[in-house]
Each structure stands twice: as structure tokens, then as C-alpha cells.
Image 1 (tube, helix red, strand yellow):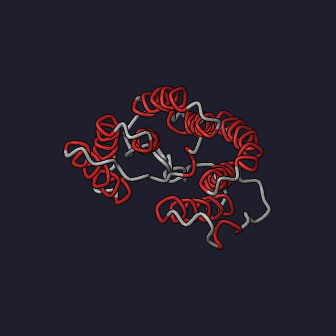
Image 2 (cartoon, rainbow, N blue to C red):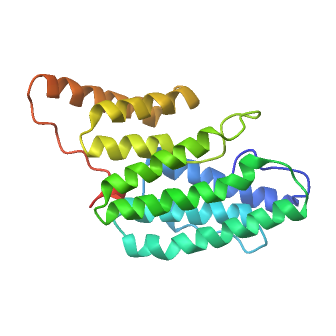
Length: 215
């Protein structure tokens, strides 16, 4: 939701948006999917952007915990939140394609991760790569789009779990060009390089756990 503080937003909307974004960044970047912050709630009020960020983050947390039923329940809520956010943008006549496309990207990410959880990993990889290409096409006038979990990272994580290390490295490198120095990506690249080195030496790669992509 960062970058969405715009004309027409009430102080309450801006405060809720900052709260939701802070929580999302903490959970996504720290990967503490069972932390107390997961159980925080959004104060009552009409704030479609904050609600979208909140429910998206909750769905990611559910996927990482292996709570696929919970993630499936949250996914249509994210879609509904997105429709409300897009309606708000249209009603306020705001021209910002990045904002309008954020919700569809959230929805597509979650659908792909749920497909992966069902064991359809190649289908999930293909879908995430499609979503990443759509994300790349968003305007960058004010920096990368406000996608708390960039799709390139999801592509790389899934490929790494499948031990497709060369492809994973390419995805992580792409992610790093868009978010230079991002700690999660730097660490993922290090794991990928270790797996590539082990493969060259004929060593069986270690199991890499990424709960959102469990078959």
C-alpha cells in the first residue's frame, strides 16, 4: 500500500493504510508467520486499501503456515477488497495504473500459490511468471509498484524448492534489479548459489522448505 497516500484520502484512511503497510512489511520481510502481529486486526472504518493489504498479508501468512483452507477463504476477500479499492480510485478520478493493477496481482499470486499447494507446481510457476511480467509492465515513476511480496521472489522461491536452481537464480537476479539490496533476495541468491555449487560436485541438494509451495 506504500505510495497510496493520495488526494481524497481522509486522515483515518491514511493512518489505517500506514498501519496495514507496516504490518505487511514486518511479516513479509521477517517471515514470522506465527507472530502476534498475524493476529492483529484492522480498526473499523472505510479503508479499502488498508483492508486489501491486511487480507493479502493474512492470506500469505496462512499459506506459509500450511493453512490452505484459511488461505482459500481469504482469497475471495482479497478479490472483494480489490474491487472496492478500484471503485474508490475510479470515483475519485485518480489516474494511476499501478494502483489499479495491485489488487489483480495480489489475487493472481494467491491463486498460483494455492495451485502449487495442490501439487500443480509447473502450472503455478507458469502463472507466477505471467504475473511477474504484468508486474514488470507497471509504471515506475515513483519507484517499484506497492507489491509487498514481489512476484519475482515467489517465482524464484518456487523454482528453488523444485531444485531448478539456474532458473531460480535468474528470477532472484531480476527481483534484485527491481529492489536492490533487498535482504530476502540476497539470502535467497546465496542459498541458490550453494545449491548450484553442490550440484556441480554431485552432492544431493538439501531440502528447501517454503510452506506456501508445498504439494
